[in-house]
Amino acid sequence: MKALFNTDDGWSGLILRLTLGLVMLPHGAQKLLGWFGGIGFDGTMGFFTQKMGLPWIVAFLVIMGEFFGSLGLLAGLLTRFTAASFIVIMLGAILTVHLPVGFFMNWFGQQQGEGYEYHLLVIGLAAALLVTGAGRWSMDRVVAERVA
Image (cartoon, rainbow, N blue to C red; front, side, top):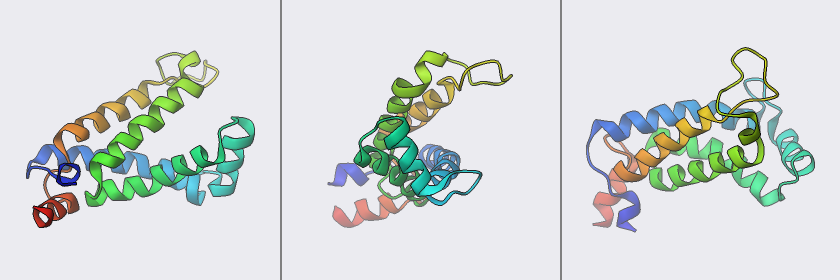
């Protein structure tokens, strides 16, 4: 249990988790709440299950993971768990949607969708958090000290 929460007091974990949390939060809010032009929970569930054919539990976990995982990263709580979850979510997105489009995002509107470069960046940030932990000013650090 301690290994899940253990972290140092370094700046790297803080910078990584705040960056990843701030980037992923709007994506989760689009899916759960319909903010930032999103279609909300019902629309996202319908899209994932009916259009994409994903099992309902996978769709539900993606929505909840992106939104609440982002909040957890911002607080530094369950950082390694969330980082691993984001890696799985991004690998799933690459394999189910973005791989056929290619590497680059659709910067100039000439592709049939978005490439997977964004997803690789999320995977890289999340992988670094798996190694470093939450870092400075994190709830994980507080939990680790109390579990010791």
